[in-house]
Length: 315
Figure 1 (cartoon, helix red, strand yellow):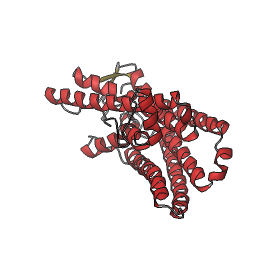
Figure 2 (figure 1 turned 180 degrees about the vertical axis):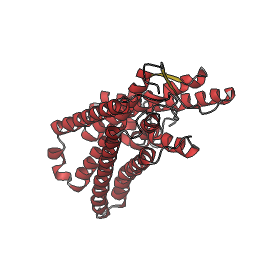
Figure 3 (figure 1 turned 135 degrees about the vertical axis):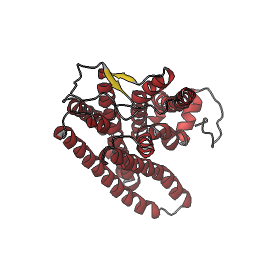
Figure 4 (figure 1 turned 90 degrees about the vertical axis):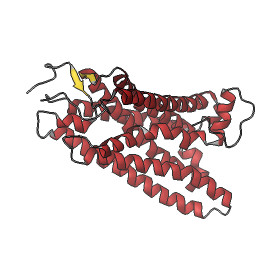
């Protein structure tokens, strides 16, 4: 039996042992990472520098971009570096940091997406009371609550996951994900962390139910809109949010609630990529880049005089 003092770190899962494919993995991840960073930085810059976008919806989008930027930066650079330098190593503290910050950003994502659903509900179902309900102070409190809850959740998971020693340092995942780390714990049943995972899943499902109920009311209100253009605008705002949120919850729940296999499968890697890497890459396109106000703000930011309505900046 070994503990954290008997080895310098952990060995992460390799996508492949073939050197040429390792370089290909590095290049693919690099392109995806740069696109994700560029898209989210554009959103952050557009909202920060355009006072016309200092409204609840766009402030939430800016915070979502921060969270997406953080979540991919926690796992992708290390995975790319390991492929480039043909290594699997991550330090003990580096693994703790990955668990802490990944849970912080992912849980904050869930809570913020829930808040955004409530914001859309108020805007569509109670438009006359929107400014009173979603005022500046309320939005700041919501955003602060989202980040605080994410930080507390990340801290609790990091403490629970690494509270017991480990009999091995081989993590069957390309980053320090909680279930594979618990798999190599000396404790057969880490009740505190398992309890924390179940609690978080219950919270996530609660958020999911809240979002579904909110959208039921939203769609009922949208169907009452007389103009076809008004209906299309409302659906184009709401449906992408609902699809991404549902995919995030379903794939994340699958990754954390299913039995942990001794050897990882392609299905495991697929679900991990879906919940950890795809949403941060797609959110700028789904929520913002296709938004007319955001496109106009980005065109001003980049010094472009005219921007086609269907421009997508290559994302």
